[in-house]
Image (tube, rainbow, N blue to C red; front, side, top):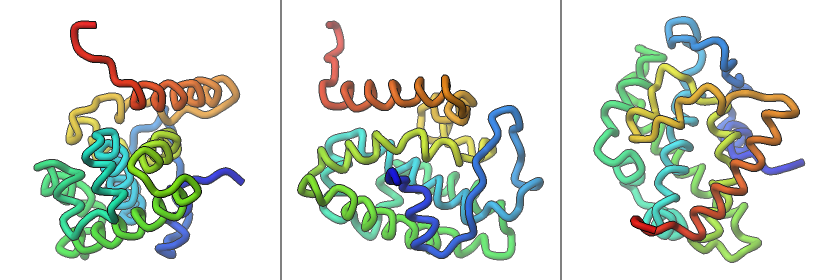
Length: 190
């Protein structure tokens, strides 16, 4: 079975199975209060994915991250993201930061295990996360507004959640080009 970082984190953390988000239905957290663990996990994985696109971010993740990994991956938007995730469960909103830090630590461990075959280098971390883009975004609750928070509107695009033969082929090609662009960034003006 192909590696899926979402299910790997979900299983390691002992969470119930996550639900893929229907692209035609843009729910709110009031309609799905049981998505607290899913919202926290996918927010962290989205942050790691975006952070690893920057070579310095990939180097930090390859070096086991840090105790402040959430500050790094969310680049000044941590409180806003914590508030959005915490709104899924008002009873434990104060513990959201600690909860998400644990998810981040487990996610980095899983990334290291998956990247080991290539030597746990920053490039391998980038490659693993690039290949997980569709898996992550398929579970991303739209009311988190991660695209806005991470300055990447493509994250909130409904087409990321579409499934089926044609959509899966398009996502496969997307992942290939995502890896190639990250491997060979284009300089401005060329």
